Image (cartoon, rainbow over all chains, first blue to last red; front, side, top):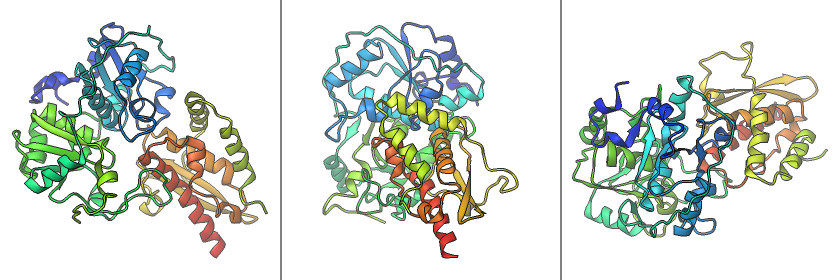
Length: 287
Length: 146
């Protein structure tokens, strides 16, 4: 894979390489953060000095279906020993799917001083770089965060309905089987099912993983990404785009691709996603 | 005959005493470390799709071999080298259900995944792991039907 700076990204600075991370393991201005889909991975070994931010335990409100509030984010930031000036570098499994999600949530609190390690955990391991089971301990900080701002990168169902009515672009990043409604959810699963299958009318189906090279988890160059999103699916950089999946996690990966790698100014992630839309009464559904 | 295989009952009891996320992870990582992929006398890659677990993003495969005395021996492959949870689940299913009476194995509910991994497991992961239980359960039911 070519160097990040040669791939034509609008904001190449939002990605760092594994080499860069290796050189900044002891940089006090940098915090390496692992966010995984597989809950065992971090404890089984991680980049030396990396802390873990877990989706369920750290980023969600324990009661409401929502993200943590300002106080919760301040507590999280203090626990992992960061200040608003700390450069947070996220990485994880599944081609950085959960890393992108955590970075997106940090954006809700204005912590945009954040990067993704290109290739994530897979590339780091493939390159034989060091891993440790040692849990780092950083002094707690006093982090003062602004109130969570949902207006810039987050969309709610009313915004999506307006989008549908105005025929503005929606990208459904789920698998084709989920998009078609053939696969809904697993029976007996208690938490996250949907009563109806299909997709939001007008949405285009671009599975999130198309943006990465499966061999090493790195992001595809801008030219290849444009072929997918612009030539195949007719998006344009000045579009107002809403992305969604099942609960907003895979779509945060596509949000990152459109917002930073292709430089779209207005991209929002609908985290209610199919588990909200597929359960709403009297909303339009397409199959 | 009890409804749940004895070794599975013991394992679920062990997990019922887990009090922290890190303790649960340590237990499961120890299990995953014991994972051994399906032997070549049973299957070699590329593995056939009809043995693949639906919904499992770690690309898990399951085989069942007849054993004397109304039981089965289960084998697993996990193609994702980072699929530690799937490996742990494979070890659990092999160590607690291989050799158990098929009548009992056929009754094992997929929601044991929640008792082992915790209720806050993500939907995608839960689906895949429950899918592994469902395949094992289906193999036992097939054996009973024959």
